[in-house]
View 1 (cartoon, rainbow, N blue to C red):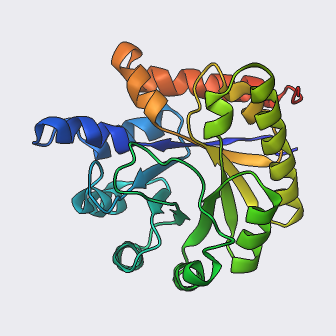
View 2: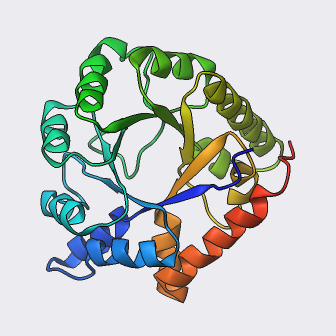
Length: 248
């Protein structure tokens, strides 16, 4: 069992609040620094094509000022590849991106998009960037990620987080099986999307998963208790759940 479960804090929505009014406050780089002191193991930031939250300057400052690893979420486009190769974050997670979506709506289709993705995975890997693909918890997607040469995957937990009752149990089982299969393929397995204090436990308990990436909930919860306390509570819940077997 992987005893330690890493927490990556996504700071996108600190930038969303800043951009709603303009100016410099609240500063996502400051939020990243606070997150690290509060127990985050790394910082995730998604530079979208429309720059709705994180900006190019944010990425520049994060690379210059951040002591912890930066995970750049990015679409498989030439523009984003050029930016990633310029800044060389420690990790990059390739995600699907639609102009009109409020948030990422599902996993990347690495099966259909294999030929397109090959160039991006190879270029990033050759530059020393650890590449993961954000995919649905399915065997076909994991096989495609392995074939592409990705170092890891991030399993999309959105369907699990949105479900209730028996449907949630089925979605959790999909994640359990996918994480185990990823481990058998020697793919480092991460998970994220829609996770909060109420639903994170069963996912955190999956021993094959080594990292959770959580953002929207933590930024929202910080309005009520502060960012440090929100992260402390999440870290505590993750560590508590890590000692419990998965119930499905």
